[in-house]
Length: 349
Image (cartoon, rainbow, N blue to C red):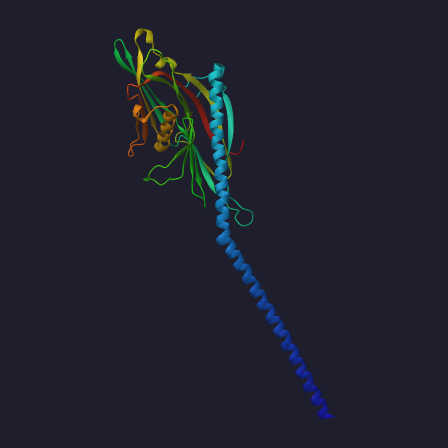
């Protein structure tokens, strides 16, 4: 009996040990499986965040730059509309352009700006940001017309401080871009490194036109120049700059429209003639203006020998001088100015 009992106890002990080791092996395999699963998940997430998220964020910020381009184009569209209204209805011009701080009622429009973007749900919620400023950069236009009279030649000139509206992106992945509205033009610049060559491009054009004039009394082909300048005024010194990754608005107020036709008007019956025009733009983006002047002269069938275009690399200006030959001439010069007050502010309107 004792031997049988001892044998039975040994059998139970061996069975317990087998059962214990079986459970231990199962637990170990479960832990190993969990660790491997976590490793696979971690590797997959790493691949997504390293290989995919930057590309997705780059595409999202590129899309946001497209939205900003539409916003700045809307600025030009509304200012052009205000210019037409002010020119066609003098009752809107309550104040003189020399006193744009007048508190009289004005024509008012607003443009919303999406300052930041490029965010992605879950994987990339951080937005890029941007800055919106009025008159942070300089832009001036100089007009000098040489007139021949019976008493000799004289010059009639103007210098207009056009001002600028600028948006500068602060992207995390996509290349930074700067949009500038100056004197009716919208300019894109992607090379913002100081000291490097200007590579700006004019996306939308200002209100400067060259048209062929009818003149049966001249052997030279004559042209009319029409220039509507946009002067952007803002009351803050130093210029107000809004930096945000959310929304803001730009408030536009139509101040005045001035017609300077009488300044450059000539009387051909007494022997007066326009013989030369010098049009100079001082700007941060001379390359864009240079290409624009080349385009409008080409569109008017004016050969490059008939004008001089100066754009020195060391000085930020571009100057168009017309004419330079006897085969082309200047018939009329029509200059006007629209004054707009621009105020950036937080919040979408």
